[in-house]
Image (cartoon, rainbow, N blue to C red; front, side, top):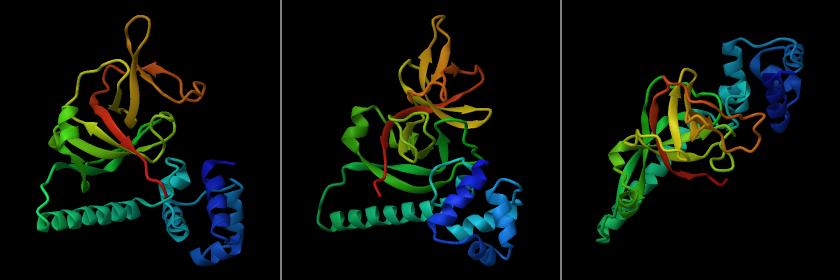
Length: 237
């Protein structure tokens, strides 16, 4: 049974829907849903998109590209709301005469994959997060040269968990062994720890101890570094 079949069945049952109920909502037959859940046939992209929307999950989740079920537009909405709360707090502080001691870092819509690459078409700033200026200064960071992005996948666990956010310093382009970087590969963006083999050749190293699933592999000579990871945080639901 493929990943789409497994996840479709899981989400449907989690939502308390029978195959017939889901089929009715989608204008399909129960037989079709059964066939898909048993891996005997697939869905066209329009039908898969409609199924994901009906179940309240992302298409990427059904495809197994992420373990985050929440659709990207909902995550962006939550981020926008959080940014608005920060601005409200700033206004309250301004009225109270509290000195501003932080700088905003842009939050980008795209994600980086701790595993195979995450495809990025373009960068779009969907929000801002404030970091204490003394913390930024202590780590030699310029907020204008940083972005907060999301990590997908498990290859960097337990250091970076699936779904966490990371602050990437775009100004840091020099590799140092043991540091974590965001790198653009032919498959998309990935986040890996930099390492070296016995000959001194650079490697992509995963922190996940399951090396059978996440083996160390060579750093392609044509894979440019995007920046160094300087901070991470996860959301507790």
